[in-house]
Image (cartoon, rainbow, N blue to C red; front, side):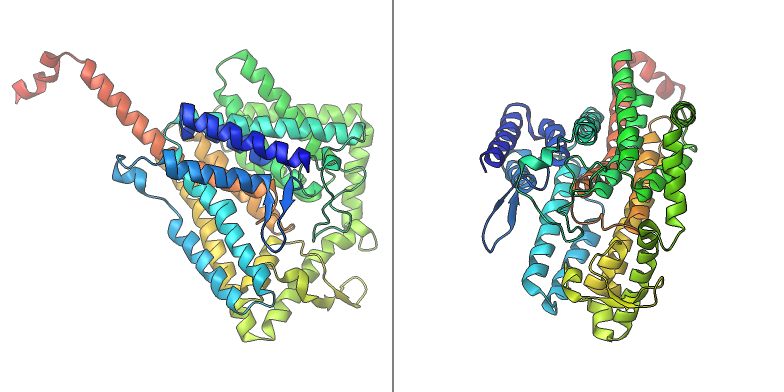
Length: 469
């Protein structure tokens, strides 16, 4: 309890101090760092109310500071627009409608309010507060700095058996019977190992982008160390989904201009070298593949489980039109005791774990809720891709990297419930906020440079064109 209170005081004190002395915008990098590093286990239990996690304490503090010192009403109309806001309101509205007929109304109501506060409010504040690319880059460096800390903690967990999570009260997550602990697999400060893998998958492309923009050797060395640490930890998660998502990201990054392709080649050579020097690594990867395609192996059963889960969810919704439209209510899946056929044995089984974000959304909020969420997420990705083609080189590279991150995250949603809980969800929505903010910042800074250039031209030179007329 004392440790949790101390963390809350540090987070609140730092945010308030930075915001009041340097401005709210300067507090966003620290906020980003704290949201990633601090585990969900750092929470105060309020009977009958929300779990007051340190992350929520940080969000509430940031929201109060935004109202008090963060708003700038003198900005141009373009800066006052908030992309995606109508789809977010629609998603929240449908969540409330689904809650009205939920099988667990109290839990569903808390979930909808939590989604609004934890993700949409954070998105809104970032979009409204980030005013220049310098701040944006500091946020990205804080993003990577937080993951470096998590990676160091992860290696201590694997090689020394010292988990920082053990300092906090144990939480048994609804997707794990062991409180998220899995011997031999690293999870650092994240709820479970695969979610740590998702976070690493999001962070590695950002590190490569920052490496491409690095202006001195110190930054380059630090970022290369970060990349190596993150690949190392991703391997140690032993999670196939993040491995595949990282491969997908690497393939898409080959379309990026600049030195990123060279970095990918270096990483590929390092990977081959590790496989040759450490044959055990290759054996682990090969055995994982063989186990995945073997239905009698637990890992093969886990792979097949996702297909059986999807089929059982569709069949359950098909039995009741109202449930197909509304779902059973947000956060209701674990209360349903969903039954279906295990394709490996032919027996009827109860699906206690929802190993798919898409299935969770579909069952909880129906096909309408799934459609609204898909529309929101796809539009966010398409906006980033469109901005990549609209902006000039080399400033457009970040848009492509953020688009790739979104694609990787959506890919992971098919095989793990990574949407709506865990630090990777905060990471995702911060990146979405930056993706819609960045193009505006680039355009504004380009216009400012053009205006400065015009002012520096002597007046008689500016009037030449008028005289010629």
